[in-house]
Length: 237
Ligand code: C5P
Image (tube, rainbow, N blue to C red):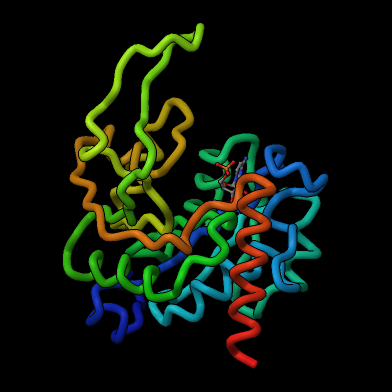
């Protein structure tokens, strides 16, 4: 049977589906509820992330992955057309559930709900690189701190050359078949999706990241996010 595809998408290089893993417990944040449901400027981190993806104009469909007991409430709070599925114990399990719900994707983005203030322009740049033919694209920032490796006792075992280190953000973008293969081959959890793709030997390309795409993990991050959003509100008034 011939597949029916949107001719505009085909011309552009394919259909883009963004997966938003939001099923973490957010223990490090210590707000007493899953991190994606903490609010900044009156919107949950999940809602801010979804709104940013939609505002990029580069995404055809969004699938959010949430704790099972929140599926119904999230469905009613998000814009029509956003799909909601249940996540798993590890981030890898949650992304896997999202991939299963995105069989229509030619290009896949994976974007942490915790990076709620990511500028839409960064999302559009990741997609533009994929459309230009890159198979895996991640935003990257130079690290400000010296990074050391340590053993189980906390004794330093090495000091990697800082000029070669990058902090990696989301959205991470992939040719969909590559990411599906990476997850099919994954036998253990990874802290990011590009890590699984690297294991297949694929070439992962970095592009310039954005400071505002920082991951909200601690109370300090949350205070920063609220300050940034407050600042934006006062500028808009
Ligand atoms: O824990 P961490 O900050 O690395 O989580 C990154 C993102 O992955 C968050 O948006 C979190 O909600 C999501 N996650 C998930 N399922 C898990 C663990 C984390 O969707 N089991």
